[in-house]
Image (tube, rainbow, N blue to C red; front, side):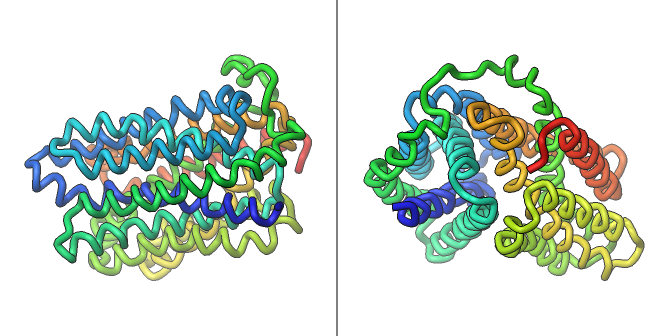
Length: 385
């Protein structure tokens, strides 16, 4: 039963990543078809992000009432319905409507699943599960590309992923008895009174972990989105090489999480976070150095250093703040993460426009130093894991 439920959770993490890259892959075709403003994709993305933030903050209340398994199944169903809605949309404004259940489903399942794994499974599984999220996120552009190159249209790409999500939803509903057996011991925080946001912020160490998470997701999303622009516009590297190494940054994160799974239980979450932050700082210094070959290698190394941060911070939460608080705090961590990943890349875009894209490594360094300062304050505040 333990192994079968773990398989279900791995499948659920793949489903988490599947929709994430669809809009970016399809938008050039959608925008041309509708003659929509190029910037409208940002409106859709912000609507999704708003939904994820709201549902992340509500995840404690939902999970205590319904349990992690049912929240996961319902959330994936909402995402599947929203993706199907995207596939039948005939105007850009309709995407805004479907983006609401899309975001609400994504935030709830993210928080519920991460807390469940943090409570019931070892740190190595948290690393591998987030690696599988990367597998899902990597598959969706291939699905969309296949549909576009075979003249099936962008709607077929969304419809295909929607069908996959519907099948996964059925799989999750069938697995509910497995979740209930594990949830029966109430270790996942089911039942009891949900925590208010003001209560959580007064728990010793919570502001530090939220700022750590904000800094990490702000750095990761900014590093990935603006890597090619920095390499081309500031370092004079050709477009093809820049694009290849920008994609290798994400491959570094995915591969790093796979490797981390083999060692994280031995070293512990706190040590892995410190190692990751050390590699991040070394990588950013290498990106700043005026040697293009070093910059390219260090961009990939930045992804490898980033790999343990997200899963290890999540996995350490029940130990740092208590099992009864973990669902609420992980939900707020997710909201903080979405704030960082949603707002920092466009803010950097404005800075690049006003000052120059050469600020790229210095902004990354500022985010990394924020993470170092806040994570060390957290380590001094809570019991080490």
